[in-house]
Image (cartoon, rainbow over all chains, first blue to last red; front, side):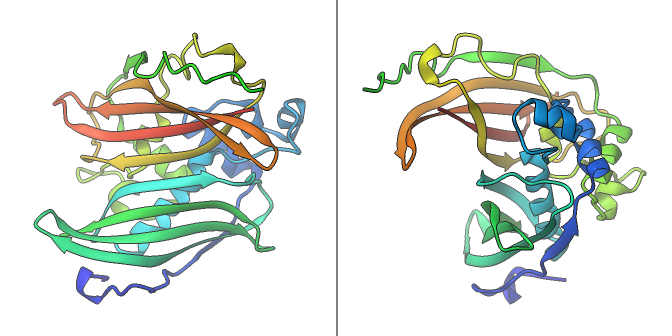
Length: 136
Length: 141
């Protein structure tokens, strides 16, 4: 189990590799109460001028959360931030990765900061972000 | 020549919604939808709590205020999101989300001027504890 003491700046987290299916994107949109047509089907998305069905931005943050908390289950995810740079679409191989950029401890607690990126198999950076994990 | 950004709506509350009590099924469906495997967030039982991004599933009555300045642009894009995560959500919690216009600012990029509007949603539980503070950044052009 990862503890604050063993984390070092520059540590790479084990990446999360996955390819979203159309059904997964639709299921996330439904569970997240995001009923927009662009999340439901290619046809509805194309009617909005998009190339096809896209994943909600929140889905990318949920994947970042999964990556971080799987790495450090004893830590608490206290902050997550993302910039949406390009569309995330089903059928595209994705790699979510993170690197430790800072660790600091004070009377307020022990914290680890990470940089995050969700990229396509072709290396396009689709979503970038940062996160803070709080350790006891 | 661009129109100066009208910041008069900054600080305005445009939605306040109290949701029905969170159910275990709500939590499990949300966790399953993004492939969560942590037992604490994905297995039914007395220790079940919601995963950190669960607050994203709360949908208020209004996505944005009705009186946003009309000159912001014809197209709106979801540019990014920040979430500060507070106390854990458990089945039975009654959550309230209050959304305000947090900021409006302009940026000029390679393709011209863009206006960003930040909507802030503060989520609390029935004990008035902060569950999450979410900033959603919309880009208009």
